[in-house]
Image 1 (cartoon, rainbow, N blue to C red):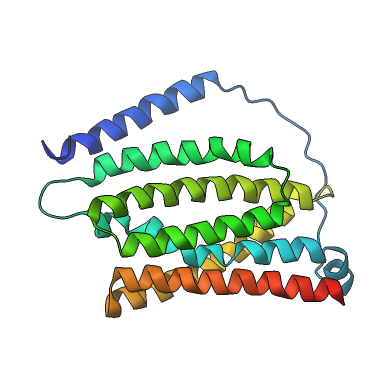
Image 2: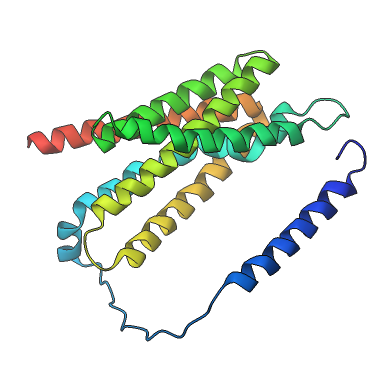
Length: 231
């Protein structure tokens, strides 16, 4: 539709969102609930010792941002060539691959692999997909981009699974907020680094450098875990 008239998909998208919002609101029932008193977490030495495995899991998630932030935010620039709008059809494939990745995760769980090791395997596969993507011809690169999206979707489900396993008290909302805050801070750094590399050396260098940094930091975490457990 964008190739026919650029305004059409924007208007259609706004209309669909409006209709969906009205439909969702009509099906929603609001009931007043008594709000329990909120507990406050003080991050002192005792909290660190007690929740150390949880904080280590938070740290495990952070390097993945450097691997995904480039392709996630710049794929339109990377794959759009000429005056014809191709990114609309590419986005359809991205959404389908995201669904596929979430479905495939269900089969991976049946392998009974340790969740941390499965996450490390996802990081390695994501890095490989980026490196092959930036050195491949257009259509082959597009296939690996879709594979990258499927892996991201699967890793996101795995991340949620790990959080549910590691958070064992009733402060789930607090700990998820802590994880989201740390992720937002690292995302800011990853975006700044990616933008600098993309401006001065190109998108391929930015994506490849981010994947390398994410790979080294992730498996550095794994090596540190092995050393700490031996001690």
